[in-house]
Image (cartoon, rainbow over all chains, first blue to last red; front, side, top):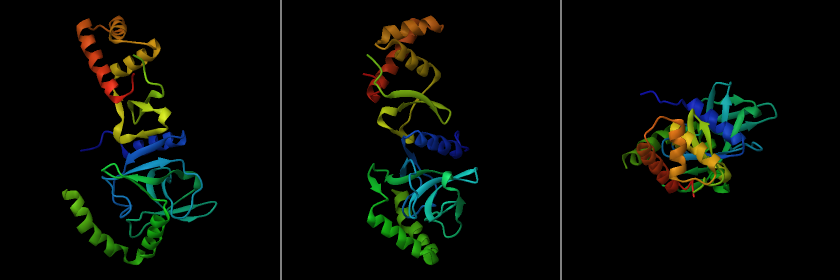
Length: 153
Length: 89
């Protein structure tokens, strides 16, 4: 069944509210930010992007046509490179002004908040990045075990 | 009764919703969505400042062709819901 409201519209409106200074909580879809964010179960709290640094998780408008919530891999004055933690290939490139929001905080289904910007989480993100060559295999195991258990519950 | 300060009606994703702007936060998973009539009543409640079931029913009957008894039942149900949600006090 086709959703009544497109994801593009929801994310566009969310970004507009963030730009007004609101903190927007939004349930995320997809598995592109595994294992840090579980689509369909976790919500993200979006706030103004501020200064963008490598390792931040941001909402960006790519090529003016699609939105992604991915991790920052490279930052330069002209361009930002992003990649989903749960992706094994494929990066997005955008301009700094295309980064519309950041998320430092996740809300799980149980209402518990988890921060992404703690030293421990940032260290885990760096380790996860270094595991890119074997990410495919780790994710396969993760999806078959952890996520299957979550979906069954 | 009056509307709680900081809660405003706005359109998000094509839906009329009440947003707690005073809180500086909005949860898309917990949006309070209003149909056209409820949105009209919300605005009217704001205009009246201090309002009650009877004042809103009177406005509703002035502007819409609706039986007073039916309007009263609807307004009562709506205000009960808004009270539970904490957007009126």
